[in-house]
Image 1 (cartoon, rainbow, N blue to C red):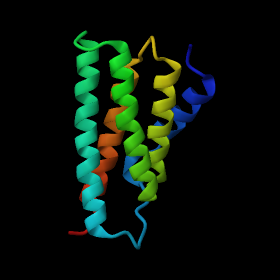
Image 2 (image 1 turned 45 degrees about the vertical axis):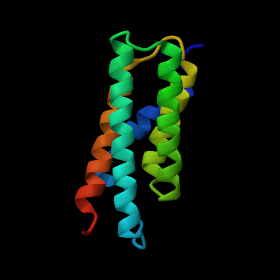
Image 3 (image 1 turned 120 degrees about the horizontal axis):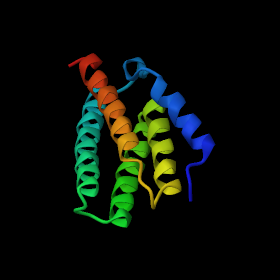
Image 4 (image 1 turned 180 degrees about the vertical axis):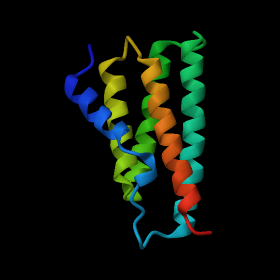
Length: 130
């Protein structure tokens, strides 16, 4: 299965947006945002570890896809609940990319996605009041 052009275009649009322009709902609970940041950063560390393990041949393609999709799906759900649509959209399209490329994983693209998500979470951490 090859990459769907619609997925590529949608993901490109999402990644073209600055992660420093995430909309933080004005009524967001700071404690919940902090928990979200911690959970997402942990997920991103696991995602990076999975990408590196796959790229070095330490885990199979199927194991990598399963792991990465689980991590991205959790992030998508949590960011959707928090009303961080930009993050949720990137995770959604990244999940689709993995599904469509389950035998030819675009590792460089996944690192770009992980980096964008990391910058978005760092922005949230920096702009959230203590």
